[in-house]
Amino acid sequence: MRHYIGLDVSLKETHICVVDEKAKIVWQGECETLASAIADCVAPFGNTIEVVALETGGQSSWLQQGLRDLGLPAVIVDARRAKAALSCRLNKTDRNDAEGLAQLARTRWYREVAAKSENTRFIRSQLLGRHLLVKQLRDIQNQIRGILRGLGLQVGRVSRMKFETRIWELISDYPALEPALAALLSVRRTMIARIGDLDKSLSKLCQGSRLCRRLMSVPGVGPLVCLSFITAIDAPKRFQKSSSVGAYLGLTPRIYQSGDTLRCGRISKHGDSLSRHMLYEAANVLLTNPKGKWSKLKAWGMKLVKRIGSKKARVAVARKLCVILHRIWMDGTEFSWGNKEVAA
Image 1 (cartoon, one colour):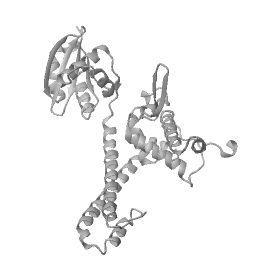
Image 2: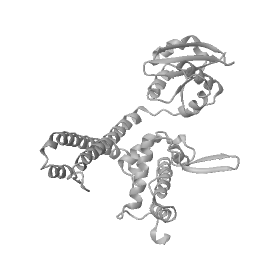
Image 3: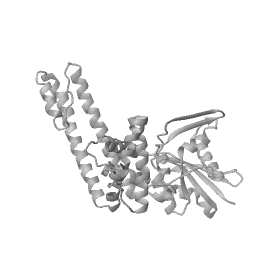
Image 4: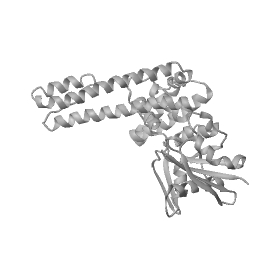
């Protein structure tokens, strides 16, 4: 008799459900969210366990690795697909979710998600930390601008290095503002310094990687774009076709069809948002940098700008960058700039 296990994982406790081949519940329970504790609970079923299914989440990667190290066939299933299957239940409880995941494992009606390697997660932590600091830095600067706007003071367009000097000039006649703005500017200086530290660390990683140097031969692709793409894909051989990478990162349009109705909407925005954001920025740099070197990719993108507009063209170029980066990764080649004279 084969058995299938569903795990509904939370921060402290994990609900477990074991079903057999005939969809009958054999055992249900809960334990601490530790790989060893889960393995002890399902130990009586031994070698009859076919699949241990858990949803994507913050703890799924390390928990899957821990279960596999203990000899359990753990797989991570796509949470969106699992939610669609579990939503048909009248009552949503952790116990019912565990049973639903066990039934998904039994029917094989799930999409397995590849867990990222440990080294990839470490690099990812630096990228996410930097992304958060940049966002908070922008919020602080906008807050300062908002405070001054209430007094009729306009900061205007100013570089990052001259921002603080400009603020002190504006509030020279308003000493009551100094305590609040001094605190915000102090935090701003600290954030800029920490962002610079992370930039140096990420640049050092790229300099020591032959793969990164090859990927950065693509125009518009720098260390941040390169590392965000590598950590999002992790294992390039998962994709049989390079054209599938754009859909994986949410850069392809949504399609809805029902009977005579067919609608093609905006991009799906599924997948890794950080990598998608970085690729869009790379496409923007490629198309707008007046000093950029000519390439067939840029020429193609400029034609799209004239035909469909700049915003859609950036998305199309970002999707094309996905294909190029994946193909360079797989083939071990570098970017081909093309011959401008021949193209003319």
